[in-house]
Length: 139
Length: 139
DNA sequence: TCCTACAATGGACTTAGTCCAAGTCAAGTG
DNA sequence: CACTTGACTTGGACTAAGTCCATTGTAGGA
Image (cartoon, protein in one colour):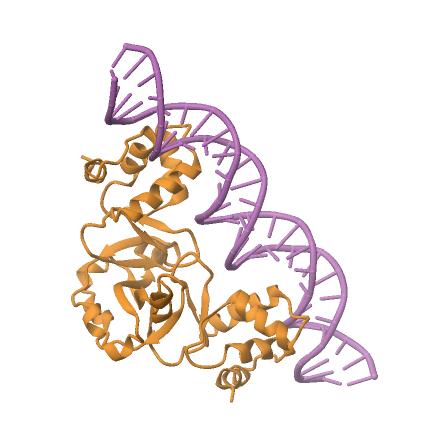
């Protein structure tokens, strides 16, 4: 059930109750929780878990490349466990909801070398912005 | 000299010393200052200016569409006066430096309607990430 | 079972930004 | 020019999100 947990275990991660619940909370598709939301859900399963541990664990998962950090504005970062399949994001300008999207085309190929200013370019993120159906309805 | 200032004046903006210095600080190409940097430079020209005024003024410029807010991570937002010409950004993962870039292609056209989940899509941002020449050299 | 290095805790601290009540001033009016 | 008024500015208190750190706890190997 928990692909994420399996992958982490496979990397020789020292398994603790805290890490397990964080991984469980984060598992799934179209999951884009803030650190505080992850903490709230983790507390439901393991009441003693601390905020600092949630931050530490999320940070480690990001370092391991198993989770992607998405910051679309100055609100809280969101954590996306869908790291194994490349995708971009569609964000609601009103409520901050995120959906994964898979646009056609390769934006990396669209950046000519004379526009790279000597940078070593390693990645690209595409963020579509708009209003989600829910916000459009409740206007 | 100050295109930005001219445009703002043309919209019937009430002109004050504070707004003038903020607009002056922000004018130019490849300018991507944080609010605090704007404040620091504004203070050099007008020592009494307050942080709150800088935030207010930047916010109004964004609302008027004369300045673009760029948040590439959870660090401070940056303000880009180059709002009249569409472009994207190339960000140094190490030091946060930003360059404007003009990739080929139209990412809006790459998002099919069955990937829009009912959103009204209004815009798209493309953020290339990498290491700038300075950080590569001193890294 | 015992050790020990790695992990978790929670509270203090930091950064970036927002809010607000009170004071100030640009610019239109007479 | 003086007056008026509502928009603008101020600075300090407040908030949200996240980081840091000394202490305590524990997974997993010997």
